[in-house]
Image (cartoon, rainbow, N blue to C red; front, side):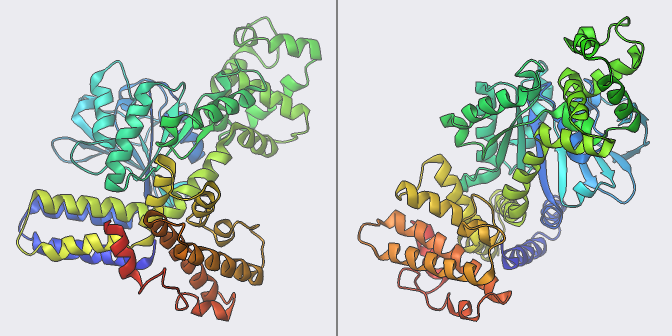
Length: 520
């Protein structure tokens, strides 16, 4: 997303604020949209009850902050934002926000609702000095398909409201098994968060992946097979960008591993083989008092609670394979848990498109306000919204990627795959768009870019390319032109500065052609 689209959106919000001066409710809505545009991307963690949402959130943060028990606080939408100093603010549905004391139990925050019921609380805001939260707002949501209809309704109202854009820009949706309710929720989120563009901005996580293989060391291999099968499911493929297996409890335990826990794992690894194997037969056997004297029963119970039997077996195996200190064990456990793969996926598909996702949500919210509360003089603002949506190329790329997943592109299979790569399906770096290694030198990038531009411009003029195909080609060419501008600005090749000006009739006279194509 170009800085221009962001700046134009700021200007539209300022104009709308002047238009609605004297209407406190409308001004509050506009100020909220302005805040949303300026703050980091909002990513919600959602899923059915007991899917491991708070556990995964703690793993992402690298701290045991979010409560993971079934208490009242897990039935409330909780936001985690960056703050230089820790703070907790409760926002009731009626009345003024109130600060809560910072208290922890077993390392996790205690979020005490006091005399309020969960349905009387709009949200809890947690400010925390976490590096992750500098670029991402994480939102923990109550379980979908809860036995309590009120709990499920709170998540649905927050993530998939009937008459408003979703409060989240992207979502990590946790699955244990693929149910119709999961598909129904993801479809509602796509339609609510993406509006008419139907952009897919969700990733599914096969959570508690270690349980698929009954806690065996190779459980993640079994989970990956299941994830691939889910990923190829026709309905899910159009609703989520991918399905990734993650052993959340292992990831959380690894990211918060203490030295005394590493010492306990080392002691278990040093046991005689027969004694160790007998201890690891099952979770029940692992915590029997008479099994071993050291580590004692209490220590073993804590390890089992923190890591699960799969994590315990894995940690012991990794120490015996050479993990000689807590840092090495942490690194290996995190990698094996699938958390790193999830982090890379979020960065690739959401982080790189954060501005586009935010602009789209803010413009949808502003357009809704103008429709529901019309005012004389709103036409220029509505026109500005339509112009940004038609010409902001980051939004056009998102829409094209969504079209590719939902209905396919009007190109051959090979051409459709190339188009997806160029508009960012595999990443938004220049090498990723051009399909070359990340360490490719600038001259080679320039040569590859010129070849791609020649090919796609030729396709727009081919009699075999229909009108719909030409429109796809124009989006691809615009992406390549943006790459050319970036390379030229970084000194990759002086000749690239003229690439956009050297366009063909297929490109047309600038963005006006793209706007025309967008209207059909």
